[in-house]
Length: 154
Image (cartoon, rainbow, N blue to C red):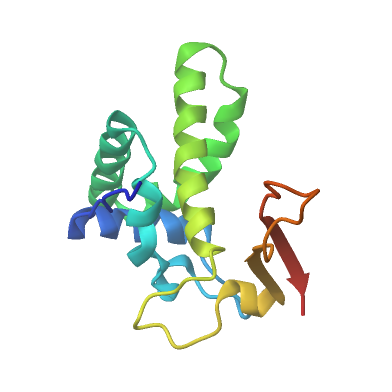
């Protein structure tokens, strides 16, 4: 089954870049989240979210695009600290943390970059290569062999 790839609005993409850079600002070796242009691949991940979760994430990205820069830069620290908050509010904030951080980390370490990015991907810098290895076909005693995911260090 092919899933439709949701499109984020320019404002939502701005919010994704802003929070992505707050989590992954880059350094002398690794590029920042926004520099890689990996945000262009967000739709492939969003395609697998339930519609209510996707709408919530899109709303959060819109809000993040409107917040002042210092607030966005402090948000990852707050989200990490919020793990200590008890009750329903703490649970809601923790779910938001997992959703935002999961999207950002998945995009950044996917090995995919935007068309405007010319540098090495974060996986190239780290010397890792991820691949799905498909078996040539099941033997008579090996019916239904699953694919294997292989991580190699260069």
